[in-house]
Amino acid sequence: MTYEQTLQFLYAQLPIYQRVGKVAYKSDLSNTLVLDDYYGNRHREFKTIHVAGTNGKGSVSHMLAAVLQKTGYKTGLYTSPHLKDFRERIKIDGKLVTKEFVVDFVQRSQAIIEKIKPSFFELTVLMAFDYFAVEKVDIAVIETGMGGRLDSTNIMTPILSVITNIAYDHTAFLGNTLPEIAGEKAGIIKEEIPVVIGAKHPETFPVFNAKSSKKNSEIYFAEDCFQTNYGLENFNGKQVFYIKKNDKDVYPQLELDLLGTYQHNNILTTLCAIEVLVRKQHFTFEKNSIYEGLSNVGQLTGLRGRWQVLQYNPMIVLDIAHNENGLTAVLSQVKNTPYEHLHIVTGFVNDKAVDKILDLFPREATYYFTQANIPRALSADILAKKAKRFGLNGNIIKNVAEAFLAAKMNTQKNDMLLVTGSAFVVAEIPYL
Image (tube, rainbow, N blue to C red; front, side, top):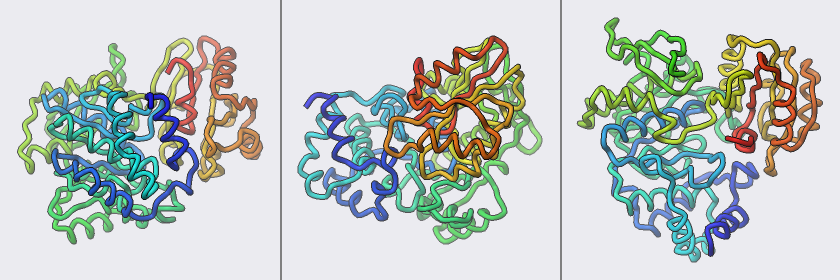
Protein backbone atom coordinates (compact mmCIF):
# COMPACT_ATOMS: atom_id res chain seq x y z
CA MET A 1 0.00 0.00 0.00
CA THR A 2 1.03 3.60 -0.55
CA TYR A 3 0.82 6.10 2.29
CA GLU A 4 -2.42 7.53 0.89
CA GLN A 5 -3.92 4.03 0.58
CA THR A 6 -2.83 3.28 4.14
CA LEU A 7 -4.64 6.35 5.47
CA GLN A 8 -7.74 5.47 3.49
CA PHE A 9 -7.64 2.01 5.06
CA LEU A 10 -7.27 3.43 8.58
CA TYR A 11 -10.16 5.85 8.15
CA ALA A 12 -12.41 3.40 6.34
CA GLN A 13 -11.80 0.23 8.36
CA LEU A 14 -11.21 1.50 11.89
CA PRO A 15 -13.88 3.42 13.81
CA ILE A 16 -12.56 6.87 14.76
CA TYR A 17 -14.28 8.75 17.57
CA GLN A 18 -13.38 12.19 16.27
CA ARG A 19 -15.26 11.47 13.06
CA VAL A 20 -18.19 9.24 14.04
CA GLY A 21 -18.52 9.68 17.79
CA LYS A 22 -19.91 7.19 20.30
CA VAL A 23 -19.85 4.08 18.09
CA ALA A 24 -16.03 4.26 18.04
CA TYR A 25 -15.69 4.47 21.83
CA LYS A 26 -14.38 1.39 23.64
CA SER A 27 -15.34 1.12 27.31
CA ASP A 28 -12.37 -0.99 28.42
CA LEU A 29 -8.68 -1.53 27.70
CA SER A 30 -8.96 -5.14 26.51
CA ASN A 31 -8.13 -4.38 22.86
CA THR A 32 -5.26 -2.11 23.84
CA LEU A 33 -3.77 -4.76 26.11
CA VAL A 34 -3.98 -7.38 23.36
CA LEU A 35 -2.27 -4.97 20.95
CA ASP A 36 0.34 -4.14 23.57
CA ASP A 37 1.26 -7.81 24.00
CA TYR A 38 1.25 -8.29 20.22
CA TYR A 39 3.83 -5.53 19.72
CA GLY A 40 5.98 -6.46 22.70
CA ASN A 41 5.08 -3.78 25.28
CA ARG A 42 7.18 -1.14 23.53
CA HIS A 43 6.24 1.66 25.95
CA ARG A 44 8.44 -0.03 28.56
CA GLU A 45 11.54 0.82 26.51
CA PHE A 46 11.51 4.57 27.20
CA LYS A 47 10.39 7.02 29.86
CA THR A 48 7.01 8.73 29.56
CA ILE A 49 5.05 11.68 30.92
CA HIS A 50 1.28 11.19 30.84
CA VAL A 51 -0.94 14.27 30.37
CA ALA A 52 -4.72 14.36 30.83
CA GLY A 53 -7.31 17.10 31.41
CA THR A 54 -10.40 18.67 29.89
CA ASN A 55 -8.63 21.68 28.40
CA GLY A 56 -4.97 22.60 28.16
CA LYS A 57 -3.54 19.10 27.90
CA GLY A 58 -2.38 19.66 24.33
CA SER A 59 -0.69 22.96 25.15
CA VAL A 60 1.02 21.53 28.24
CA SER A 61 2.16 18.46 26.29
CA HIS A 62 3.73 20.66 23.62
CA MET A 63 5.32 22.99 26.18
CA LEU A 64 6.91 20.07 28.02
CA ALA A 65 8.13 18.55 24.76
CA ALA A 66 9.64 21.88 23.65
CA VAL A 67 11.59 22.29 26.90
CA LEU A 68 12.77 18.67 26.85
CA GLN A 69 13.94 19.10 23.26
CA LYS A 70 15.89 22.28 24.04
CA THR A 71 17.46 20.51 27.02
CA GLY A 72 18.86 17.86 24.68
CA TYR A 73 16.56 14.91 25.33
CA LYS A 74 15.37 13.00 22.28
CA THR A 75 11.67 13.62 22.82
CA GLY A 76 8.64 11.80 21.50
CA LEU A 77 5.24 13.53 21.46
CA TYR A 78 1.88 11.84 20.98
CA THR A 79 -1.23 14.06 20.74
CA SER A 80 -4.66 14.02 19.13
CA PRO A 81 -6.56 14.92 17.06
CA HIS A 82 -4.45 16.12 14.15
CA LEU A 83 -5.40 19.20 12.13
CA LYS A 84 -4.02 18.69 8.61
CA ASP A 85 -1.85 15.59 8.54
CA PHE A 86 -2.34 12.31 10.41
CA ARG A 87 1.38 12.28 11.18
CA GLU A 88 0.99 15.33 13.46
CA ARG A 89 -0.11 12.85 16.13
CA ILE A 90 3.33 11.22 16.38
CA LYS A 91 6.50 13.33 16.46
CA ILE A 92 10.08 13.11 17.61
CA ASP A 93 11.84 16.40 18.31
CA GLY A 94 9.10 18.14 16.36
CA LYS A 95 9.48 15.98 13.24
CA LEU A 96 6.50 14.00 11.99
CA VAL A 97 6.58 10.22 11.97
CA THR A 98 7.72 9.08 8.53
CA LYS A 99 5.22 7.95 5.93
CA GLU A 100 7.27 4.79 5.47
CA PHE A 101 6.88 3.85 9.13
CA VAL A 102 3.11 4.39 9.05
CA VAL A 103 2.77 2.15 5.97
CA ASP A 104 5.04 -0.53 7.42
CA PHE A 105 3.28 -0.54 10.80
CA VAL A 106 -0.17 -0.92 9.28
CA GLN A 107 1.03 -3.71 6.98
CA ARG A 108 2.55 -5.51 9.99
CA SER A 109 -0.74 -5.09 11.82
CA GLN A 110 -3.11 -6.66 9.29
CA ALA A 111 -3.49 -9.96 11.14
CA ILE A 112 -4.24 -8.41 14.53
CA ILE A 113 -6.56 -5.81 12.95
CA GLU A 114 -8.61 -8.56 11.35
CA LYS A 115 -8.65 -10.54 14.58
CA ILE A 116 -9.71 -7.92 17.17
CA LYS A 117 -10.93 -5.00 15.03
CA PRO A 118 -9.38 -2.21 17.12
CA SER A 119 -10.47 1.41 17.01
CA PHE A 120 -8.44 4.01 15.14
CA PHE A 121 -7.22 5.48 18.42
CA GLU A 122 -6.21 2.12 19.90
CA LEU A 123 -4.06 1.33 16.89
CA THR A 124 -2.46 4.76 16.63
CA VAL A 125 -1.45 4.73 20.32
CA LEU A 126 0.41 1.48 19.73
CA MET A 127 1.89 2.89 16.52
CA ALA A 128 3.33 5.77 18.56
CA PHE A 129 4.77 3.46 21.20
CA ASP A 130 6.36 1.29 18.51
CA TYR A 131 7.85 4.27 16.69
CA PHE A 132 9.29 5.82 19.85
CA ALA A 133 10.87 2.49 20.80
CA VAL A 134 12.32 1.90 17.33
CA GLU A 135 13.79 5.42 17.30
CA LYS A 136 15.07 5.05 20.88
CA VAL A 137 13.68 8.25 22.34
CA ASP A 138 14.86 9.31 25.79
CA ILE A 139 11.37 10.31 26.86
CA ALA A 140 7.91 10.71 25.33
CA VAL A 141 5.10 13.06 26.32
CA ILE A 142 1.82 11.18 25.86
CA GLU A 143 -1.51 13.03 25.78
CA THR A 144 -4.70 11.14 26.57
CA GLY A 145 -7.46 11.13 24.00
CA MET A 146 -10.47 11.36 26.30
CA GLY A 147 -10.79 10.77 30.01
CA GLY A 148 -7.95 8.81 31.52
CA ARG A 149 -8.95 5.64 33.35
CA LEU A 150 -10.11 3.85 30.20
CA ASP A 151 -8.00 5.77 27.69
CA SER A 152 -5.79 3.57 25.51
CA THR A 153 -2.70 5.51 26.62
CA ASN A 154 -3.30 4.37 30.20
CA ILE A 155 -1.53 1.03 29.85
CA MET A 156 1.85 2.62 30.52
CA THR A 157 3.55 3.56 33.78
CA PRO A 158 4.96 7.07 33.39
CA ILE A 159 7.57 8.83 35.50
CA LEU A 160 5.11 11.72 35.97
CA SER A 161 1.37 12.20 35.56
CA VAL A 162 -0.15 15.61 34.78
CA ILE A 163 -3.83 16.58 34.91
CA THR A 164 -4.40 20.11 33.60
CA ASN A 165 -7.97 20.98 34.59
CA ILE A 166 -11.48 19.57 34.93
CA ALA A 167 -14.54 20.97 33.14
CA TYR A 168 -17.69 19.66 31.51
CA ASP A 169 -16.99 17.78 28.28
CA HIS A 170 -17.76 14.28 26.98
CA THR A 171 -20.26 13.92 29.81
CA ALA A 172 -21.92 10.91 28.15
CA PHE A 173 -18.72 8.97 28.81
CA LEU A 174 -17.04 10.68 31.76
CA GLY A 175 -19.92 11.69 34.03
CA ASN A 176 -22.27 14.59 34.63
CA THR A 177 -20.52 16.17 37.62
CA LEU A 178 -17.03 17.60 38.08
CA PRO A 179 -16.12 14.98 40.73
CA GLU A 180 -17.20 12.18 38.36
CA ILE A 181 -15.13 13.63 35.51
CA ALA A 182 -12.18 14.16 37.87
CA GLY A 183 -12.46 10.52 38.92
CA GLU A 184 -12.04 9.40 35.33
CA LYS A 185 -9.07 11.72 34.75
CA ALA A 186 -7.53 10.61 38.06
CA GLY A 187 -7.39 7.12 36.59
CA ILE A 188 -3.95 7.99 35.18
CA ILE A 189 -2.47 8.38 38.68
CA LYS A 190 -0.17 5.40 39.23
CA GLU A 191 1.33 3.75 42.30
CA GLU A 192 4.12 5.92 43.76
CA ILE A 193 4.29 8.09 40.62
CA PRO A 194 4.08 11.84 41.33
CA VAL A 195 1.19 13.80 39.84
CA VAL A 196 0.84 17.50 39.01
CA ILE A 197 -2.65 19.03 39.02
CA GLY A 198 -3.02 22.20 36.97
CA ALA A 199 -6.09 23.71 38.62
CA LYS A 200 -7.27 23.49 42.23
CA HIS A 201 -11.07 23.37 42.43
CA PRO A 202 -13.17 22.74 45.56
CA GLU A 203 -15.18 19.98 43.87
CA THR A 204 -12.24 18.11 42.36
CA PHE A 205 -9.58 18.71 45.04
CA PRO A 206 -10.88 15.89 47.31
CA VAL A 207 -11.02 13.46 44.36
CA PHE A 208 -7.38 13.99 43.43
CA ASN A 209 -6.21 13.96 47.05
CA ALA A 210 -8.02 10.69 47.75
CA LYS A 211 -6.71 9.02 44.60
CA SER A 212 -3.11 10.12 45.14
CA SER A 213 -3.28 8.98 48.76
CA LYS A 214 -4.60 5.58 47.73
CA LYS A 215 -1.80 5.24 45.19
CA ASN A 216 0.93 6.58 47.51
CA SER A 217 1.53 9.22 44.85
CA GLU A 218 2.92 12.63 45.81
CA ILE A 219 0.57 15.33 44.58
CA TYR A 220 1.50 18.86 43.51
CA PHE A 221 -0.89 21.67 42.63
CA ALA A 222 0.56 24.06 40.07
CA GLU A 223 -0.72 27.21 41.78
CA ASP A 224 1.07 26.15 44.98
CA CYS A 225 4.33 25.66 43.06
CA PHE A 226 4.39 28.96 41.16
CA GLN A 227 2.39 32.15 40.70
CA THR A 228 2.31 34.63 37.85
CA ASN A 229 1.02 38.01 36.82
CA TYR A 230 0.07 38.08 33.17
CA GLY A 231 2.19 40.43 31.08
CA LEU A 232 1.13 42.04 27.85
CA GLU A 233 2.36 40.89 24.46
CA ASN A 234 5.85 42.25 23.74
CA PHE A 235 7.33 43.65 20.54
CA ASN A 236 8.32 40.14 19.46
CA GLY A 237 4.66 39.10 19.45
CA LYS A 238 5.04 36.83 22.50
CA GLN A 239 3.45 36.81 25.93
CA VAL A 240 5.67 37.82 28.83
CA PHE A 241 5.21 36.28 32.28
CA TYR A 242 6.80 37.13 35.62
CA ILE A 243 6.87 33.85 37.51
CA LYS A 244 7.21 33.91 41.29
CA LYS A 245 7.76 31.25 43.93
CA ASN A 246 7.17 32.20 47.57
CA ASP A 247 7.05 35.87 46.51
CA LYS A 248 10.47 35.65 44.86
CA ASP A 249 11.07 36.11 41.14
CA VAL A 250 12.25 32.78 39.72
CA TYR A 251 11.46 33.22 36.01
CA PRO A 252 11.41 36.96 35.29
CA GLN A 253 10.38 38.01 31.76
CA LEU A 254 9.60 34.47 30.65
CA GLU A 255 8.38 34.57 27.06
CA LEU A 256 5.76 32.25 25.56
CA ASP A 257 4.90 32.20 21.88
CA LEU A 258 1.41 30.82 22.55
CA LEU A 259 -0.81 33.90 22.74
CA GLY A 260 -3.98 32.73 24.48
CA THR A 261 -4.39 34.46 27.83
CA TYR A 262 -5.62 31.10 29.15
CA GLN A 263 -2.06 29.84 28.76
CA HIS A 264 -1.07 31.40 32.10
CA ASN A 265 -2.59 28.34 33.80
CA ASN A 266 -0.80 26.00 31.43
CA ILE A 267 2.60 27.61 31.87
CA LEU A 268 2.36 27.20 35.65
CA THR A 269 1.42 23.54 35.18
CA THR A 270 4.37 23.04 32.84
CA LEU A 271 6.86 24.71 35.19
CA CYS A 272 5.55 22.71 38.15
CA ALA A 273 5.97 19.50 36.12
CA ILE A 274 9.55 20.49 35.28
CA GLU A 275 10.30 21.13 38.95
CA VAL A 276 8.93 17.72 39.92
CA LEU A 277 11.03 16.05 37.21
CA VAL A 278 14.11 17.70 38.72
CA ARG A 279 13.26 16.94 42.36
CA LYS A 280 11.84 13.44 41.99
CA GLN A 281 13.19 12.00 38.73
CA HIS A 282 16.69 13.54 38.70
CA PHE A 283 16.28 15.43 35.44
CA THR A 284 18.52 18.42 34.78
CA PHE A 285 17.28 21.56 33.02
CA GLU A 286 19.35 24.64 32.28
CA LYS A 287 17.28 27.77 32.84
CA ASN A 288 18.04 29.05 29.34
CA SER A 289 16.65 25.80 27.89
CA ILE A 290 13.38 26.44 29.70
CA TYR A 291 13.30 30.03 28.40
CA GLU A 292 14.15 29.02 24.83
CA GLY A 293 11.76 26.09 24.81
CA LEU A 294 8.75 28.07 26.00
CA SER A 295 9.57 31.00 23.76
CA ASN A 296 9.49 28.75 20.68
CA VAL A 297 6.86 26.06 21.33
CA GLY A 298 5.19 26.44 17.95
CA GLN A 299 8.46 26.28 16.05
CA LEU A 300 9.83 23.34 18.05
CA THR A 301 6.73 21.14 18.21
CA GLY A 302 4.39 22.42 15.50
CA LEU A 303 1.53 23.35 17.84
CA ARG A 304 -1.26 25.23 16.05
CA GLY A 305 -4.83 26.30 16.65
CA ARG A 306 -4.46 27.87 20.10
CA TRP A 307 -5.21 31.59 19.74
CA GLN A 308 -3.27 31.36 16.50
CA VAL A 309 -3.07 34.75 14.82
CA LEU A 310 -3.03 34.28 11.05
CA GLN A 311 -2.68 37.98 10.33
CA TYR A 312 -3.22 41.50 11.63
CA ASN A 313 -5.17 44.35 9.99
CA PRO A 314 -7.62 42.74 9.98
CA MET A 315 -6.86 40.43 12.87
CA ILE A 316 -7.69 36.79 12.10
CA VAL A 317 -7.54 34.28 14.98
CA LEU A 318 -8.03 30.51 15.00
CA ASP A 319 -8.77 28.62 18.22
CA ILE A 320 -9.92 25.03 18.61
CA ALA A 321 -11.86 25.77 21.83
CA HIS A 322 -14.95 23.56 21.72
CA ASN A 323 -16.53 23.36 25.18
CA GLU A 324 -17.98 25.81 27.69
CA ASN A 325 -14.79 26.18 29.71
CA GLY A 326 -12.52 26.65 26.70
CA LEU A 327 -14.82 29.04 24.86
CA THR A 328 -15.37 31.15 27.96
CA ALA A 329 -11.61 31.81 28.04
CA VAL A 330 -11.36 32.52 24.31
CA LEU A 331 -14.38 34.83 24.19
CA SER A 332 -13.08 36.70 27.24
CA GLN A 333 -9.88 37.42 25.33
CA VAL A 334 -11.92 38.50 22.29
CA LYS A 335 -13.81 40.94 24.51
CA ASN A 336 -10.51 42.50 25.57
CA THR A 337 -9.21 42.77 22.00
CA PRO A 338 -9.82 46.10 20.18
CA TYR A 339 -11.80 45.91 16.94
CA GLU A 340 -14.55 47.81 15.12
CA HIS A 341 -16.68 44.78 14.23
CA LEU A 342 -16.42 41.10 15.06
CA HIS A 343 -16.94 38.26 12.56
CA ILE A 344 -17.15 34.67 13.80
CA VAL A 345 -16.93 31.49 11.74
CA THR A 346 -18.14 28.62 13.90
CA GLY A 347 -19.30 25.02 13.80
CA PHE A 348 -19.59 22.22 16.34
CA VAL A 349 -19.83 18.47 16.58
CA ASN A 350 -23.28 17.05 17.25
CA ASP A 351 -22.65 15.70 20.76
CA LYS A 352 -21.84 19.03 22.44
CA ALA A 353 -24.19 20.92 24.77
CA VAL A 354 -24.54 23.61 22.13
CA ASP A 355 -27.27 25.60 23.89
CA LYS A 356 -25.00 26.30 26.87
CA ILE A 357 -22.14 27.20 24.56
CA LEU A 358 -24.12 29.54 22.28
CA ASP A 359 -25.23 31.60 25.26
CA LEU A 360 -21.58 32.63 25.71
CA PHE A 361 -21.22 34.23 22.26
CA PRO A 362 -21.56 38.00 21.71
CA ARG A 363 -24.82 39.12 20.09
CA GLU A 364 -23.31 41.98 18.12
CA ALA A 365 -21.01 39.80 15.94
CA THR A 366 -21.73 38.67 12.39
CA TYR A 367 -21.81 34.87 12.20
CA TYR A 368 -20.94 32.36 9.51
CA PHE A 369 -22.43 29.04 10.55
CA THR A 370 -20.66 26.07 9.01
CA GLN A 371 -19.91 22.37 9.48
CA ALA A 372 -16.75 20.30 9.17
CA ASN A 373 -16.61 17.53 6.59
CA ILE A 374 -17.05 14.70 9.11
CA PRO A 375 -20.11 12.55 9.93
CA ARG A 376 -20.10 13.83 13.52
CA ALA A 377 -20.51 17.49 12.51
CA LEU A 378 -23.60 19.37 13.67
CA SER A 379 -25.61 20.56 10.69
CA ALA A 380 -25.04 24.25 9.95
CA ASP A 381 -28.80 24.63 9.45
CA ILE A 382 -29.53 23.27 12.93
CA LEU A 383 -26.73 25.37 14.43
CA ALA A 384 -28.08 28.57 12.85
CA LYS A 385 -31.59 27.78 14.07
CA LYS A 386 -30.35 27.20 17.61
CA ALA A 387 -28.15 30.31 17.48
CA LYS A 388 -31.06 32.51 16.45
CA ARG A 389 -32.77 31.74 19.76
CA PHE A 390 -29.78 33.40 21.47
CA GLY A 391 -29.86 36.47 19.23
CA LEU A 392 -26.95 35.29 17.07
CA ASN A 393 -27.52 35.99 13.39
CA GLY A 394 -25.57 35.50 10.21
CA ASN A 395 -25.05 33.31 7.18
CA ILE A 396 -25.22 29.57 6.63
CA ILE A 397 -22.28 28.40 4.53
CA LYS A 398 -21.83 24.66 4.93
CA ASN A 399 -18.35 24.40 3.44
CA VAL A 400 -15.79 25.60 6.00
CA ALA A 401 -13.31 27.01 3.48
CA GLU A 402 -16.08 28.92 1.71
CA ALA A 403 -17.42 30.24 5.02
CA PHE A 404 -13.96 31.45 5.98
CA LEU A 405 -13.34 33.15 2.64
CA ALA A 406 -16.75 34.85 2.76
CA ALA A 407 -16.04 36.11 6.27
CA LYS A 408 -12.60 37.30 5.25
CA MET A 409 -14.04 39.22 2.29
CA ASN A 410 -16.45 41.02 4.65
CA THR A 411 -13.84 41.79 7.32
CA GLN A 412 -12.55 45.35 7.17
CA LYS A 413 -9.06 46.50 8.19
CA ASN A 414 -9.98 47.33 11.79
CA ASP A 415 -12.31 44.36 12.28
CA MET A 416 -11.59 40.98 13.85
CA LEU A 417 -12.34 37.51 12.48
CA LEU A 418 -12.46 34.54 14.86
CA VAL A 419 -12.73 30.89 13.81
CA THR A 420 -13.66 28.56 16.67
CA GLY A 421 -15.99 25.84 18.00
CA SER A 422 -14.22 22.70 16.81
CA ALA A 423 -10.76 21.45 15.93
CA PHE A 424 -12.32 20.01 12.77
CA VAL A 425 -13.56 23.42 11.64
CA VAL A 426 -10.16 24.98 12.29
CA ALA A 427 -8.49 22.12 10.41
CA GLU A 428 -10.36 23.00 7.20
CA ILE A 429 -9.29 26.65 7.16
CA PRO A 430 -7.13 27.48 4.12
CA TYR A 431 -3.59 28.70 4.81
CA LEU A 432 -3.41 26.98 8.20
